[in-house]
Image (tube, rainbow over all chains, first blue to last red; front, side):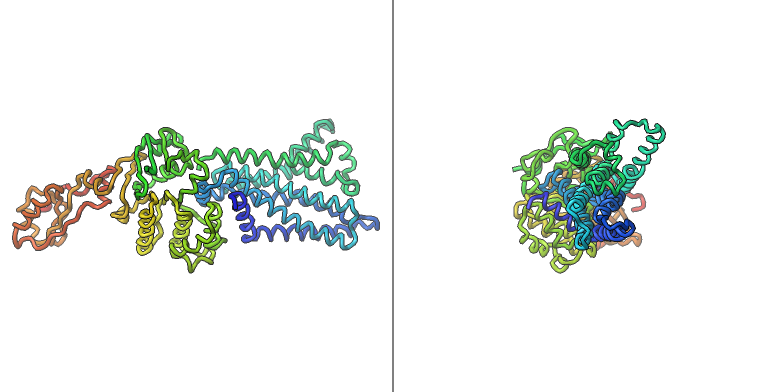
Length: 274
Length: 310
């Protein structure tokens, strides 16, 4: 077995042993079930597609929760091993630094994907069995699971970048929490403030690109504007007209948010002296 | 063949010279003890040998390769036990060793015999979190021994081991050396290394102040023997006025003399000529501690005459 797979496998088993996998999966499943079933009650109307409603509520929730899980999972990936002395030992083994970083990252992505896939998937399946799934809603739900995993990967990549850049775990934890606040809360508030302050003159030409600068906004736009039935529930019908990005562009944006921080992290890790 | 060739090897961190113009050649299948205070540069030298850091100046070749640029084939031939390593608490001893075996491309069937060799068979299925300090150290050693390394580096390997384990540990090291491995171990507990390593390198503030076989270092240091003479202390001191007195027993039952090696027989003859005044003699050659203190520049106790002796 090569170094990459060995390290990814160790990270996954580590996640299983220290209950990260179980915890994250249960948390996401519980919320998904709650939103899928409770969320469908107040809409009342007979033709409501509960799965489509669930996509709206779940994506709003995921924006807060998944970045937090990802940052907590990833912030000590490198610096933690360095502090424990394991990294010094690992670097003397016949593995390259990119195998170490890539293996750990993929292991963590697998944990997050499993948690979102199983957690959300179970709720989705229950909803379908309850007769709530038309083909388009199913596609929207599938896209939600996929993009949630990508959102997680983007914030994992950011966490890794922090983890290779600092000397102490405490610093990494602090910066991780800061990043969460920045991307999930502050950024949107600032954007909204700018819109209000400029009395809407912060034009339709710049605004969409500003949204591209935040992986959480990309995720939100992708899930709330891609599918017609979701759009009507989310109240984003107007916005989707203003934001002229195709779903593929939005996903590509998310991919960039994974690749760029991870690439920079790999470069910094390669240059870092043990 | 030479396992390690260091030429003018230097490493600076910022303005701090951790290692300064170190030259030495270590032949294969030898055991070298790196000796020095904490912060003298032992770990820096080990990291340079492992290729974890690159030299600021000078060069180092390890197993005929440049360690900082060498690939996985080089690393497969190396075993390393870091000074402080905390394995994951959640994994068992077996799981931990298997992880490292996979990384090194060593068959998993090698793990059980290695665990037995370091005496961890009974604890192999227990989580590392429940291990004592000594057991963790043994697991670290097992990990370093994976794949019969040609070069084994052990950073402070005996910390946390009780004396019995320490004996076992040195037995393992001797067996490996006899099987052809080159071993470098660092320590600041010097006396335990005596007669257990072929060569010693003494590092002081980043400089290599001595390198060679222990017996030669000891001879070059020219340290005196310590001779403890029991009997009538006053009479002995009177008769041997020109010999340096190191210490006198509080109850005046013995007196310690410093004697240059070359004058050993002369002094012994004079002592026996003293007759019944002298009842017993103990000889103590300079210990590795004394040799170390000599090279590391601390003032020696031996050789300073005490006025109270007469």
